[in-house]
Length: 115
Length: 112
Image (cartoon, rainbow over all chains, first blue to last red; front, top):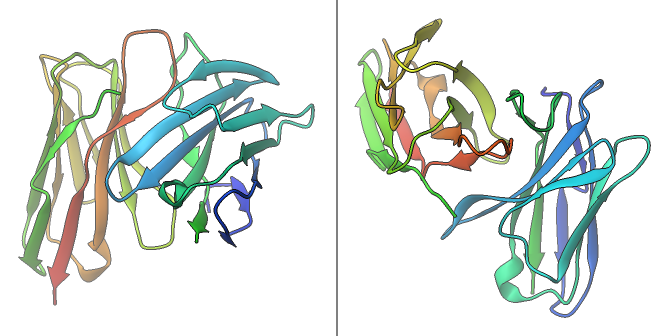
């Protein structure tokens, strides 16, 4: 158990819909990262938040957004869903945010299926 | 984005055999990490390497940070059935950002 929790574990929805994925980082970790894992693209970094502020952006679509709340949990919002958005979405957390590299611990993931 | 090349893509080995897999990049990395992912789970950190040339062990696992900073290998000795899974290399680039770039994965099957 990494200490990172994610809900829900599975999500099935239809094209055009909007969903919210939730992540709680390990106790004491200030950084949260979101990754997408699909069969054809592997694990891809989406976005990072550090202590409530956006810190880095990766291959995140404009239809996707995230935020980190004062209690440090984070939500990833996916809107206008397309079939190709079906994937595993992982959250990871670490102590540091930038400048000092720190180990990332991953949650169990949310499996999203868009029909 | 940057992706690391891992080889082999998959391996089928007999229980008790040693395993070796590696990861290469066209650009340098500040850290190399090795993760294992089992079905339905998130990646679990196995070994972290922070310095070029560093050789680190974790039980039956040994990993090295290549001297050029563009590669890393992972060895598993005396494999057991529970070693089955997908092994990913990952790393941080020297950009100041803390996000990870991941390899394409090596799927390991251990035959009892």
